[in-house]
Amino acid sequence: MLSLICKRILMAIPVLLVVATITFLLVRVVPGGPFDADKNLPPEIVANLNAKYHLDKPVHEQYFLYIERLARGDLGVSYKYVNRTVNDILRDAFPVSLQLGSISLVLAVLVGVPLGAVAGISRGGKGDTLAMLLSTFGISVPGFVIGAGLIFVFGIVLKVLPVALWESPWHMVLPAVTLAFSPAAYLARLTRASVLEIVDKDWVRTARSKGLSPQDTVIKHILRNSLVPVVTVLGPLTAILITGSFVVEYIYAIPGMGRFFITAVNNRDYDLILGTTLVFAVLLIIANTLVDITYQILDPRMRVED
Image (cartoon, rainbow, N blue to C red; front, top):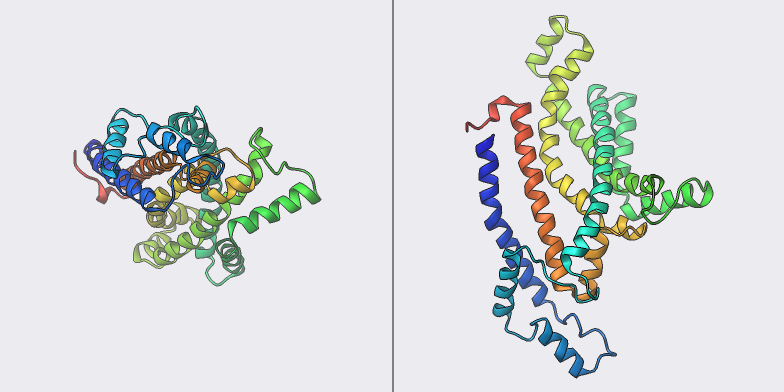
């Protein structure tokens, strides 16, 4: 397990370099610059701003300057948020997205996995039908529709929950449920498919024939072995949820990373786009490493010798 962690750390360096390079080139390919959209700025001011941030230099020189700053842990400055560095913005926004994503992930797992397990065990029954209807609804309906519906019912009609900002635990309820809805539905369908594949195995029938209780059969044999495919998707799913949902953060006016990322794309805020993308890449690497470790816990056959 230790060797796995060390390998992941060593692999992360070139992966992050590739991500930074591709993202850097992509944002430069898009027409327009950070200051071109502001028609109120005279050409002389735009030229001075481009010179200040080295945007007047050739692309390859800009790239090496950025990589040099990145090696020092400096993600650059924001062109639109005056006197704020990308490090400062992400330092403020990441904890918000981390809270929202963590709560949503827990909700998605606590709802989706049991729902899928019940559906798989009661194949063809009422529980299976109801679970599949709910999961199909959750996958089919876009997040902004679910968010609008929750705001209308709980914020406008019932007036029991706040519909915007991020100021108290009550403000977290609607955004977390909105963000968890689709992942919970997806996990339910994935768990059901995995349980259906396991439930008719010979060793499951053998456990039942030996008199093992239905509860122990489900927990010790069916559910544990069916979680491996579920754990596979938890890596990228965790990174996506924690970095923040763009739509959800915009709907509920939450000052998280997703909201800043959309603003950065609209404003051609190069360094903020790069910084947010790199944070996402780091989280994805960490999440996938945790997934591999979980594999080895769930299935000893996958263990790697140190």
